[in-house]
Image (tube, rainbow, N blue to C red; front, side, top):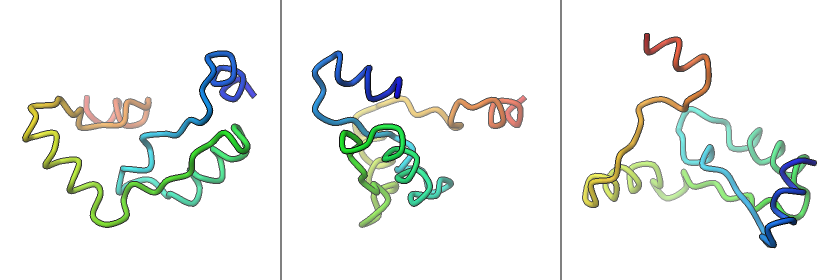
Length: 81
């Protein structure tokens, strides 16, 4: 796949996605898609475990890190207009 080739060409052992931090995303579906596209190179981590989303919010605020309020997809951008 394009993703697997991109990671391999840059000598990445693994890759993952930030989608698994969102409480609005289904981690099982995200993981299945990642494994299908990346095979063994996809690092399937559910960052929502142990209140992970709340932790990221606190860390972002403490370190003054910008967080956009939408995922960036066409559907969420349309909803913000």
